[in-house]
Figure 1 (cartoon, rainbow, N blue to C red):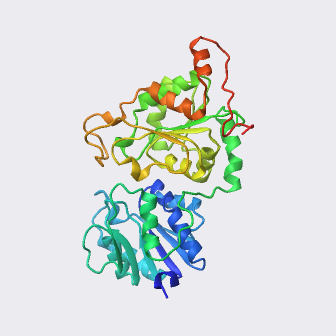
Figure 2 (cartoon, rainbow, N blue to C red):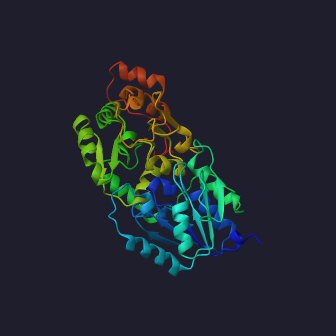
Figure 3 (spheres, rainbow, N blue to C red):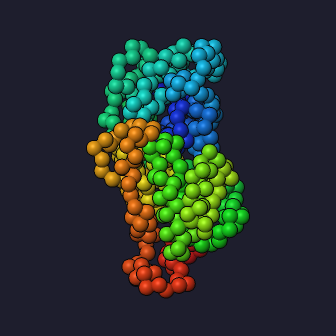
Length: 376
């Protein structure tokens, strides 16, 4: 019998950002559907572990700041690494699924799992790593979508994939919180609204906040309510947008992740960079307009199941894989008017509406069939 399918205590390793964990969903779903008696424990970063709330296939979570994902900020502390090995050994895992991006190595976590006594260890690798892995897939092309990279690993081990699309579980309590959140922000829960998320973990993936402000102002002037969201550390971006577009509504750090996913599900359209809301919107099928920088190939992270427009200027340096751009983000040199035009096209606004706006008619409100509208 396939020993992977016989495993009943499985460790899934992905100590990365929230969006990376969300993209594990289809692979973990395939494992759980193929081996329903198996217990899946997710080893994730402290921040990324929060996404487990949206993945019903995860039974338990270990939140850990791993050395092999650190960017040089962790202090030299070998005892910390021994504690991780001990923690994993105490759980007596049968198998470890080591999920990585195209640029990450599975061999370091594979060796940690070896020392923890985990007999089966699988990952994808471009380089030789000795016997750290018991199953080592040859590295796939860099441009492969991350969700497909994850699925490729579990399929190679014998798990059956029946659904390749992203999905998240949003409980009823999170959905019920959406109307009060909107009302407290001064928005009508019954009206179609655009959710705009200006942030991203890497500066090189952020469309300038000044231009997001222009986008927001133009949209609100056209009668579209806009809700600007983010985490507390991005409050400076919110301040820039609010200064340019005082009619926008802003909530930063005011929701749980399930509530935020419910807000994205409710929205008529999401505007964002290449970051978490892109993947959540793809999972709940909310239309998207994405200012997609040249840091990666579009094929690596783009939405696949929902309607979407990706905006980017071609540049010779794409993909650069940088956290900060040294030349001023030419790949995101996109006029605010172009973003607004793409947004209104996604929302289904007619040319008549544009003509009436340009004619100076006031009091005209969008009246199209939209997600989030009571007629939808």
